[in-house]
Image 1 (cartoon, rainbow, N blue to C red):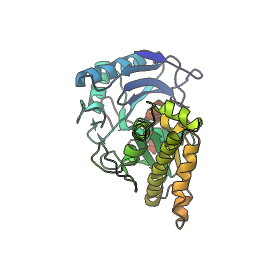
Image 2 (tube, rainbow, N blue to C red):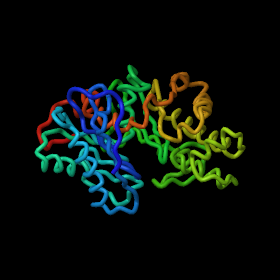
Image 3 (cartoon, rainbow, N blue to C red):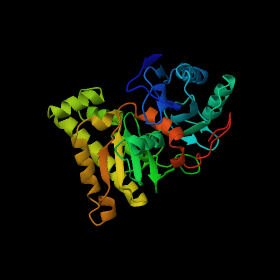
Length: 334
């Protein structure tokens, strides 16, 4: 298990943030200003080779480590941002890239973990895309804006929605799953079963795979970024292709929800600053729809701490999180 920490010393009540994905799970303590408590960030591997209980053991290890760092501070809740799909009401998760967990009772396992440690704190579980959107709305690039979509472009593509100043997660918790909007012009099969999903076109691994199919010899998004900067024609075509697909997906989402700002983060979103220009070009194709063209697409204002800050926002910003504004007793969850 790896540890890290940064920023000024946290003060006042803290939330225990948990971010679960297909390659790692992280925890940290976050204060009411969105700052990570130094020395409270812990990481453990997940991945396809672990068993279901092995995955839970990784989760429990980082939870235990973060809880030990609480000291005499008040712990006001546990916020969980997780890859999906999820069943928000039941607290179940079935991450697409973690086949060992199908209908896994993630929220209840964390509630049990707290009960075993006699630690009174509510638990809130939401999609990781919604958590990252909350973080940007709280202290990032979308502060003060009431109609926002957060978007993560990395190994996969995820997102979340804040409309009218409140989160929108839908009856199952999967609203805002922008990665699985189908975009025109791309006949590519997606792991979800769809064809032309933006994740299947524009994620980091899929962009690298497309470039390799065109004769490029690199192996990673980082190498693709280097090749793009050096002027490699295939790398440049791959980044333009990704930007076009992302822009079309954002335009569709803006047409549906009348968005003001889309904050885009994730490792592959930094492949080149030109990516945002290609996104803008695709949005501006909706020439007759001013309400679509008005949407601002900006880089996320968050560092790699963003997913943890977003998970903590599920607790610290509970009034913005639909259905979780009221305090809850020990063992309860939302």
